[in-house]
Length: 167
Image (cartoon, rainbow, N blue to C red; front, side, top):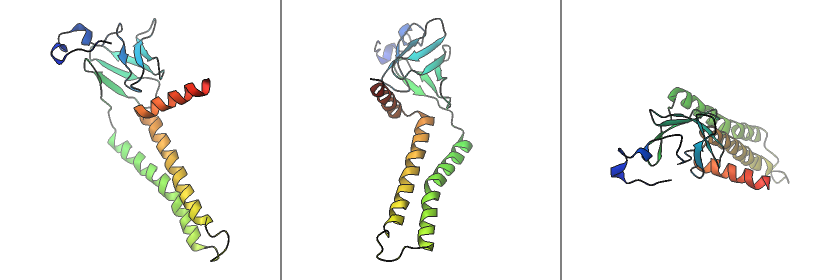
């Protein structure tokens, strides 16, 4: 991949997105995307995401994800152009917070409504159960958010783990 100076970005033909070029993957930022044979699409050689391109607008969109993520080619790097539906995003965050907070709250409520006998051998269980419920639901929601938004570090770690397990 060629690195161009800032003065040559607007006039150099190499700075334009084209099917003959190779570019850094905007999802994992580790692999390279290039045109797939006999198609008008790009594919990453590391994370295996597939992209469609709009060469006139210098845009690519990932097509193998539930979240429609789009990037604009600036001539040297990708700039995210993700459209956010703020109403849906707000609802998702409220649901995520409820999934994290409600189960530990219910465990806490039951532990305080029916407390264990003082000094009994299992008196620590409600506290551990509250912590375990909070951590497990936090991990679950974090994983779901990482899957939907495909954070670059998450995508790289997921691919590296997948490659390591295939050995």
